[in-house]
Image: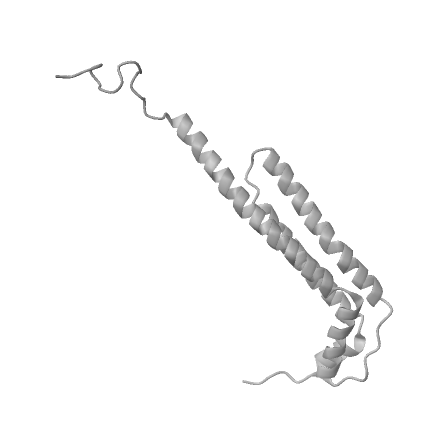
Length: 158
């Protein structure tokens, strides 16, 4: 004996149809967006912490200590701060948060358009790293004695 419609189930409701392809695609897109936002927020938080560390790394006293340590390592005369160190410090302290702010802004705009955006903080990190390397190269260039000592130092032998 069967009760209800031939397909079984509740006699008052039609049988459930399997989700169609459009619904599955929509669910898949939503899941990808959620995962993208989780990764993106994690990367943005990590980027904020890295920005704070870089800002402390580029204070004038921190730069002076780092270059003074290099002077000691290479056995160069006593360290004297070059005139451009203050400007280099300001560029580093201001530049890193600007890079972070631009990265955050672009990420939020892309998310608002319902697009995948977790790759943007990665690009921001690469830009910040290149910015840091460029500033450090400028810092080394401000110290001609350091450049000379680095060029004439014996290279390690195997």
